[in-house]
Length: 83
Image (cartoon, rainbow, N blue to C red; front, side, top):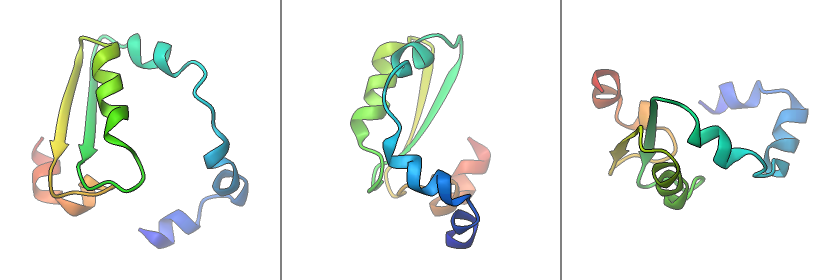
């Protein structure tokens, strides 16, 4: 996974932390179906973000992975592919 991440363009790597929150509430509030996957041991994304999405949209389905970090698809592959 580190190799894949390192293949991202340098501008993307540098700008990732500069992304603002403008329009995020509207974007997550609009979809008629939305599936949020969250690893409880994620050291990158705070759990408040998943909760915020749930508050914004009644059509959200949350799939929480208590033993996963930032990459539930890697940390809990067997469950991820069957969810």
